[in-house]
Image (cartoon, rainbow, N blue to C red; front, top):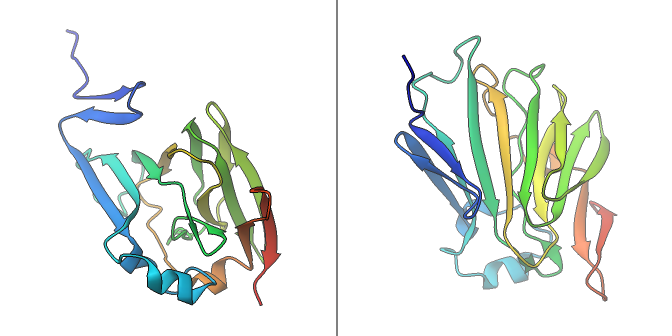
Length: 186
């Protein structure tokens, strides 16, 4: 017997479609303390949507061994002061579990930090990124359009949203000609 999947990926909209899709929005008010320019951050409308995450609810509870989740992050373009829009970033609660990202649209960076060492990988359509266990990771949109990235991670991974300064010792800013530059936190 053949069964049709109840979730599909739409390559034109870069979104999941079907039943059992959960969606979460992160707004400017949820990112207090994440940007270096507090004056520019305070000037933002607190209801500004910074990014959205959608994922298939496969019925497995977080912490269940042996399962996988699949989702897509949609990170809007923009800057706060001169710092590019970014996701909160996180460790996995079960630190030794890895994750995969796959670039769908837009351009940006995947920032990974482990033991104080930061690696930045360019994210573009078709790029594949392995995030090793024990690495804090976040997305940064350095482009002019939405950055959409799919992810697959273990159900037992969990999320640990440690304070940003503990996870990421560097930041990515737009320089005077509109190119990304990296600066250490002060």
